[in-house]
Image (cartoon, rainbow, N blue to C red; front, side, top):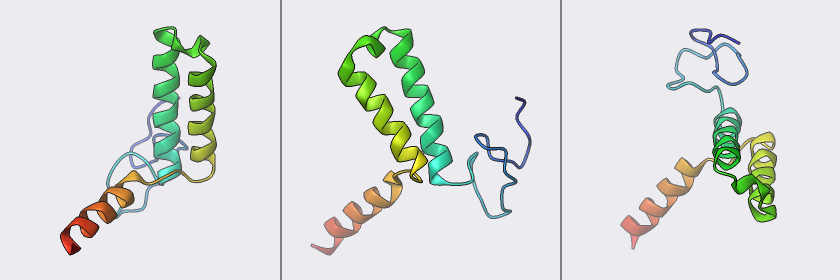
Length: 84
């Protein structure tokens, strides 16, 4: 599959004009992260470890559920620190 300009790098959906980045949503970004993690684990042999395999499965489950936006988590931590 070739990269389509102005389309999500994961699902090829057209990106809204205000989207900055390669992905249309957190789920697509998390799917790409999970794929990179799984490939790295396969490359260095960690994928044979049952714990790593469970981690890979969990990453894909989170991605399919829409992802976990770590940027929002980081923002809330910064806001909490600033408020106290």
